[in-house]
Image (cartoon, helix red, strand yellow):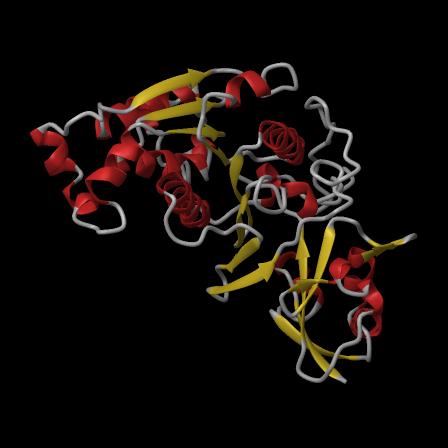
Length: 268
Length: 90
């Protein structure tokens, strides 16, 4: 294995002195990769901290450009980035924090035809998407590829976090077997979200991603963590693998990822 | 049986803004029925014509009722039922 430079020893010293990480763990992080799907409210803080932590390769998937209404929570983008692709804006922030990180831009909309190819080279996937269709697509792909996906979702003042590792526990569709009918759940654009909430949830996701890469602690596999920011209460629920899950169950007939249509509209 | 029900934020406007309310019943179904009769707006958001909406997860204490006896799962005094809707924002 490679040797640290003096700058690396200083940069990562607060990790290296942790017995659970150490020089060995830090080297593991430097040779690891995380795919961030979505550079919005969840992906922004997660990407910043994963870069600072020295995760060697960060893949960025997003097909949007930075808009003014993003900046209340998507802290990896700045006012000067308005109009830029989010992947480019995020790359600049990551490189400013830690130029050692290799950034791979996937300036594409995730689809059934590209998802397997995009996820295949990464150790861990971080789901920071903002709609059910993409979450279903990404879940199915992770099940097929046997990859752990660190899940986070936010809505108004509430957040959810879990780790879906199809080799060790339930997948997203054990938890959400069916997509809510169109109009039954207000869209993120219309419903609003407290700006700091995805910060909290995104960093819980980053924490889980780092634990998975290092193989330390007890990941949130089979556990759903809920945050109610209004009451400031966390609640933990048990998630079980559904034997009849359409994605990972024993009768599942998943052979390739498919698109799920979901019309994201508000009924209030 | 008096059971506590945790209400997700979008439904709190139907229950005077409270995060947790009390309801009566011997099974999950009875408790949710009692909740719906006390707070009419809640019922139609939990149920559609064919029963409990598929994207609404109901937990008894920390367990998903789909892995217990579903809505017929018996409850006892002091249990906590949590209504957890699927959310997707990011």
